[in-house]
Length: 204
Image (spheres, rainbow, N blue to C red):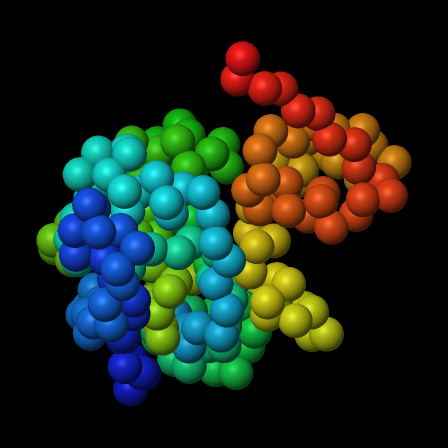
């Protein structure tokens, strides 16, 4: 059964006024058997949010609520959800759905699925536009929801949803790695100055 959460977020309505956010109410997709309603506590900020709301990656669906590093608390679960229950601490990354049938999906590369649905600025088959984490709540399929351990602050957990590259390539303590830019991983690196070196290259 769906929650009684109010879905409200800070949206942009014009890419030329991308710093002017307005509080809007929005309607999520219909609640399904595998869906999880999450009350959002924190959401990280990513460079892709800026690229999207400025129109740098093409004209977005407007009005648009961005944010894809989401952390919060489960408030409702669908009848077939098995991994989560009301009250669980969870997060959502940059993707809400995929076909789960193509070669990419079957090889755990759902982010390359031709039918993937992003956390915001995408459409479900019924036409519902996905809205992101700078909001009060998000509705997400169970497969794209992840548990957050007790003791980890939501504010620290939210940007952690950018850690997939480290996991994929087996990064562990002592591993040397390079991170381009100051996105989620870059900020984590910057927070550990004793173990991090920075390279700068001027445009000229």
